[in-house]
Image 1 (tube, one colour):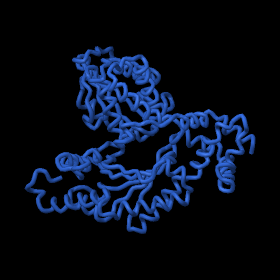
Image 2 (cartoon, rainbow, N blue to C red):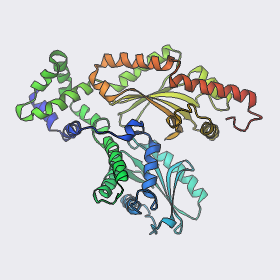
Image 3 (cartoon, rainbow, N blue to C red):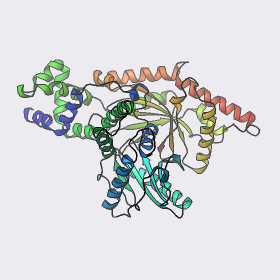
Image 4 (tube, helix red, strand yellow):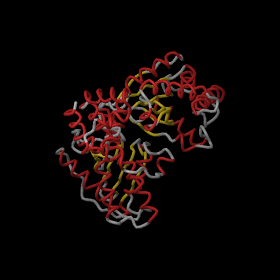
Length: 441
């Protein structure tokens, strides 16, 4: 056991994990507003940084870096580079959510478009298909323009090779923004504070606490972690710490936390929740990301399915979903719009919701965010946090998730009940007034 434990502690991924734990967690506005993982918020920040004349005060510095970096990624894939462009503010337009593209950079004089699809997860072949679909639409609409597509994901540069598009890793974007901050070009103190907090949350994606690096760390040291879990169960934290050599006593706390996290199996927890939902009459379906770091299930009950159908969508157009990782358990409410008819239905719903929010007191909690593959997230609720997962055993987590899920679904003042009631009312209104009222979805 001693040799295996030594290998674990010497693993660079464990050292990075340990450094993360030693870094004090500071106040972050994004955490308070629960915007940390929302792709739409990150796209807003990037679009802001890409506009030379915006309030960040750095002019075209980030835009120049981005164009040069995209050209390097295009060259690495033997693809056509972008034309030489002018970075003057009057020549640059940056659009959000135009033609379903997260960010579009338009160089007017050069008639050049850079279409950026932003994903806060690892790259997959499904992302490629989505980006290529958007690119075909842009080329059809802008026939006399140079069009280049960029896929931005948490996978590092060079880790995937997609034909005809430039893949950029969030790690490179993080480093570029950090360089601008270190060079002192963000001169406003309020902008500096904002950028520091933004970099802090972006950096969390590249550390092994919950992503691909963490999953690989658990997989590569499965045997010793299993043994250390036995030690934890019998002797507690002190027993785990006692196995660490005297010259590595600083690693004890990190090892204890890692052993605690390794107790949890997101896939197994998903199966437990699926069985619970089946008992309530739901029909859960499954999905997971390619690196197996996140597992999802989604379902729609009869009431929601009937509401969607009566409003002109299909029975799966409105659904709830849950995501399971080693970091947390989350609940989402989604629109699904794979077909052109589905897109039309969702567009009408989105237009109506802008005028009549689900919850007027918390309208920002229902910002529609394109997740790709036809899915658009409308609402997110954290069911169990990372800190709670670490402190609980696997059986305790299963019991607590079911308890909280039951409370969330059954409470009269929960967002779950509010959302279901909202769409039932819309369906009723649609039956009565669809032919006479313009606002009806």
